[in-house]
Length: 296
Length: 317
Image (cartoon, rainbow over all chains, first blue to last red; front, side, top):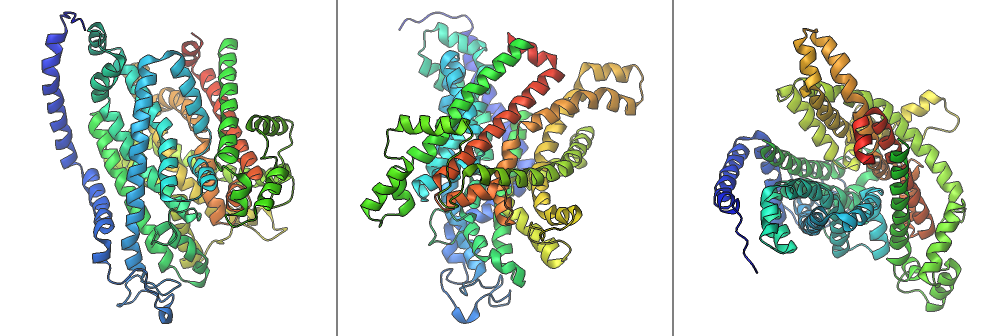
């Protein structure tokens, strides 16, 4: 490889890490002082703890059916009441955090990695590859996320792997669109031109030069999409297409007790609903704060 | 303008073609053996073969695709396996119901959310703004079935002021019908409010920061005149056009809301088709939703470019 002496390179390269480090410290300082971020972290933190230590925290066995005490309202013994099989609702809510908090992050990570790669390639090379990819992206986005997922889960049969693959593959084009826009902005800048003049290969320029500079949008996309992944997984399991009918799951518990609402039985429905709402709102508060920290 | 329209139409046609391929792939290729998926793992192989033959899923993929697409665009959407009725009849009925619900929700949410967005923009970074933005965001991101259940619990059960089902008794007046639609519509309103308010806020802030607004202020015009004549005029119409491109969000929401409230629209039709593994119905219904979305996007794009010549010229280059 020939090294072309570029007069701008020695000036920009050493100063860049310092600036990046300062910017990162600034962002962390902003986040530590942001009430939005702290409240979001607290909400998510509670559910992460439940997902990891659920079986230790839960006051009862979430699967144990107490047939003599079916659909009993909240009391000292069962703070959130019991469900149609006499199982403790509080324990099921606590343990139910696990299924969604395992699938959603993996699916989102898959989508983010795929989407970032597609966005980098299309934004950097542009031209025909870009045009073709963007048309496919538009076509995928023409079908609402929940309907695409429904279609795929029906076609492949519901399972954890199906959910992860489906959500990952549907998120990829959405994330690709955002990353591509960011890359288009970066590709005009001098450091990219400098790398090209140094005869660096395309892969190196994309992943070693451009990628670190578009990490902001990528991180923001990841947090926002994580919220949507939980949204989609909860909705699918509410519709009866959950990952695994045998383990406690919020959406599934709601759909199985929804019919009892007219009989004034609200507790097996309200508490899992609140669980989903607090988890998703928490993640979105975190996402909003992170987005703000990058915008400043 | 002609060139812009042509380019937009050309792109939409390509996207439409890809859309048909994706839907075909999802409903006819992905399941592998379609009849096996429908009949289950324990069905007799002869029954599976017979059903595959009846569905035409034993033919080459290209033939199947062409057959399905060419019939679809001639208006023959196939026959539903679970309802034993033409898909076009089912879809026609369901579309009317869904449009009724969506229109009701839109009439409520657009003025409300636009007002919220404008107020937030005018009070930028102050507590009012944070409450509207974060409150709206929080409501938007919660799944529809959770919001819907909360509304049912509050208004249907505890306050007991609104009906829980979306279906009014046969032959009831328009007003009664609307009363039954309040809860499902409100669920949609909550879903869409944060999103529309957010876009309105961004558009208004952009107009507030524009040079023409500064000129108007420096000219000494009263604040009210500046906001109505200069800011809102420039921010609202494009904002609404952008909102129209997001109808997919709305239709996605309908799947869950219609299932929750047992309302016979497109969403519940798709859900039923998915549940019954009714692939012909599922494929046609999903394709129609996709086409509806493409049309809405196309119209919004054209409307937006009519309102904003800069986009038109940039795109035609």
